[in-house]
Structures are given as structure tokens and as C-alpha cells.
Image (cartoon, rainbow, N blue to C red):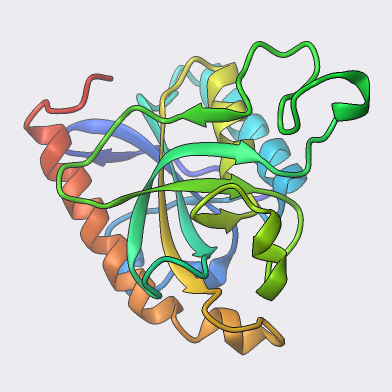
Length: 214
């Protein structure tokens, strides 16, 4: 199991930042935060964050806020720009043959698209779809969202289990063209690192002003 960092103090508030992969954790973010790296995909994201929050709960050191951050794909949003998540869905869930709306988990009292109500002022918002696949090209035709990732919905569910609010921050790394190799994802991560760091600074100022209702 990866080492579990203590929540960062951001604007006087304990915040646990959560990311999928070391490749997304560049020098600008390293100068500001120590995130939990959960691994890639919904299963790793849910297992790792739930385990970490369980340990922090045992230490009586739970954060007041979880921030899921990293990269995302989109063919409609500006590449390398950072967006905050307005709502998140789970595109892998399809129990429609049993009469459930696609995207809704059977017997779970959550809509298919779950709103994330906390907002940072001045940062653009977008709708996000989480799933276990890399979306590319025509794959976006079936996505009811502005951008895609592989972890935020899972991070949200783990945070909900502990009664914690979550903010999603995603930089668009790919999607304007077909993704064919690793460099199609990594080429924009340096710029995204700097812009996510700016978003962390904005979060710090917003928390210090008491402008988020935690």
C-alpha cells in the first residue's frame, strides 16, 4: 500500500489531494501539496482512497475536504485548460436491462449525474464522465459529458462514505485528436501541472476567505 500523506493545510483547512498517477504530479504541484496517489482506474481509485481515509479516521485526522485532481480527455474543451467538475457520472454502469436508468447503480440512492456543488470563483466548470477506458475519437459519441477521466466518480463515492465533500479539478490533456500512444496523453501534463497549481492557490485563497461552505 502506498504511504498515506497527512492532509495538507490549505487556507487554514485540512485538505486531502488525490491523484491517479505520478506523471500528473509535476514540479509546480510538488512545491505546494503532497497528494495521495491512488492508481489508475475506478477500482484502484476507490480502494486506495477508502483505505487511506480509514487510516486517517483511525488517527482522528480526516480532512475537511477531498480534492480529486489530474488530467482528463475532451474533444470539445480547450486543451491544457483546467476545469472544475460541475457533475460527475459513471459511464461503465449499465443495468438498463433490469429497468434502471443507464448510469444509475441499482439500489443506490444517487442520480446518474451527481452534482458537485462546491465552486471556486472564476474557474470554468464542466460535466465529467468517469469510466475504466481511455476514450478517443468516435468513442466520445456515446459520452454524455464534456470531459472524461477514470477516477473522479470513485473518489467521490469514497469521500461520501466518510461524509466528506469533494471538489474535482481536471486539466484537459487529450481528445482533440485520436489517442494512439502514451505521448498523446503526457505531452500537455507540464502545462496542466502549472495550471492545477494555480487552481490550488485559488482554493487556498477561497478557503482562507471562508467562501466555501464546508
